[in-house]
Amino acid sequence: MRQLASAIHIRPMTHHDLPKVMDIQRVAFTNPWSFDMVQKELTQEWSTVLLVEEDGPGGVEVRGFSIFWLVTDEMHLLNVAIDHAHRRRGLGRLVIEASLEKARAHKCRIATLEVRRSNDAAIALYGSLGFRAVGMRPAYYTDNREDAVVMIKDF
Ligand SMILES: CC(C)(COP(=O)(O)OP(=O)(O)OC[C@H]1O[C@@H](n2cnc3c(N)ncnc32)[C@H](O)[C@@H]1OP(=O)(O)O)[C@@H](O)C(=O)NCCC(=O)NCCS
Image (tube, rainbow, N blue to C red; front, side, top):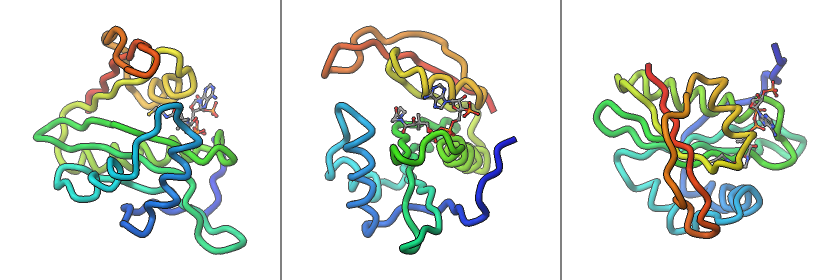
């Protein structure tokens, strides 16, 4: 099992974190969410944004985030990204596990998500967390008409 540094924390995002979250968004996605889209998630009662951060040489640094909705007994995972320089260190898994923990506490029955068909890294990560592919949404992503794989996890 991978050894994570003890100086890694998970916490809810605040408005102060918007610039750093946008920096990570812009590098992580070909079609990133806008500032307004991320900001709106902070105002919606059903939405949660969790950050994974780490004590660095210059203080605490945000490494990535997870955005999800809890609606009745369903969790919908909308957006996850880790700072490019800190990938493959288990941080993506950590922030999604923390998100799933929130969903469990909310008594969710299932978690759902859509992911680009070509996103092998994310599909492998979700699969290792118990998500299974249950269908395809053809041409779901408007930028390049890429299909989405629909994945579901039962709690
Ligand atoms: C997908 C993403 C969040 C994964 O974050 P991460 O912190 O690098 O992932 P982890 O280190 O926790 O990896 C956990 C497991 O996922 C799988 N995985 C992660 N990256 C992978 C890659 N590039 N190729 C294959 N498998 C990968 C592996 O099974 C890995 O376990 P291992 O390292 O022990 O083999 C990150 O690559 C990212 O930010 N991508 C761009 C944004 C994105 O595509 N988000 C998802 C769609 S919303």
